[in-house]
Structures are given as C-alpha cells and as structure tokens.
Amino acid sequence: MGGFSGLIYSSLPVLVFVPVNSLRGLTTAIWAALGVATAILVWRLVRKGPVQPAISGFLGVGVCAFIAYRMGEAKGFFLFGIYASLVYAGAFLLSLVVRWPLAGVIWGVLNGHGTEWRSDRRAMRLYDIATAVWAVVFGARYVVQNHLYASDSTGLLAVARLAMGWPLTGVALVVTVWAVRRAGHLPATSGSTTPGKTGESVA
Image (cartoon, rainbow, N blue to C red; front, side, top):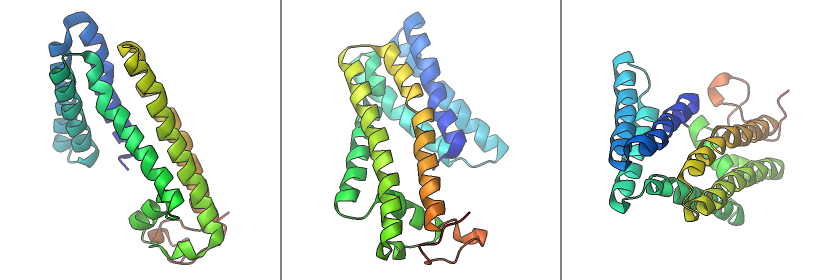
C-alpha cells in the first residue's frame, strides 16, 4: 500500500546498513540506516508529499535497528522482517481456510466494494488465486531468509531481502490486478464498474 515509493524507502536503509557494517561495524551501521530513514522522512515532509510510506519505513528501520543493537549482531537487523513474512503468510493462508481471501477483503476495503463479492463464486475463485500467490510470496521470503539467518549469512540476507522484495511483490501485484479486473472490481471512483456488482470481466 506504500506503492513504488514505499519499496524504495524500505530498500535504501538495507543498502546502507550492510556495507557500513562491514566497513565500520554494527553501531555505525545502525546509525547510518536510521540516518537514511530520517533523511527520507524529512525529505517527504519538506516536499509536502505523502508521508505514510516514509513514516512506516522509519518505524520499521527503528525496530530492526533496535533488535540488531540488543542482539549485538548485524543479522538481527533482518529478524523482524523474517518473522513478519511468516505472520503475513499465515494470515493469507488462514484467510483462504475461513473463506475470506485477504486479497479481496483488502481490495474491497480500500476501493469501496465492501464484501458483497463473496456471494459470487467466480470472484471468490479469483481472489483465492491472488491470496494464494501472496501467501506463497511471504512464505518463500520466510523460508529463504530464515535459512540464511540461521547460516549467519548477513550479506546474502540483504541480497535476498532486496531480490525477494520488488520482484516477488511485482508478481503478486500483477496477479492481484488480474483478479480485480476479471472480477470487475476496479476502483469505484473510476466509473468503470458499479460498486457491489460482481462477475463482469473488464477488457
């Protein structure tokens, strides 16, 4: 929900943290990552643009930095993200089990379509697919990054964090947009569909 800018904001502190840790040590790397997150937040405030992604990024870096500081190990910087992926994967999987696919629920809340689509079997199948893809994405992140964490591969952790961030998120977003279009649930404000009307394909 932070959009493309949110992906950038979440990646820059990682790009700074790993090399600084190798060259100057953990404490300097922590302050460098926090400095980058702070600079991004200030820059967004000065430009009077949307600050939600920057604030989220700043808080996320703060939590990661605190964990790394408490552990005294650079790999601790990635621990929060690893377990966050596990929680997200579990949430998406659980939503499939209880028949409330999160991809549809979240899209409905954000774009004013509510939950009437749940009575449409076709829409449910589409959102099941999108939700399953998100579950796989988060699950893959957890499995790979947790293995690298256990192996003390901090450098590879950073690579995996970035490589499994933008590309996999892009794949999941493409599938979600496909599901939304096939279900006829483009944003209600676009005028393309009537809120609550399901089962229409949008060319």
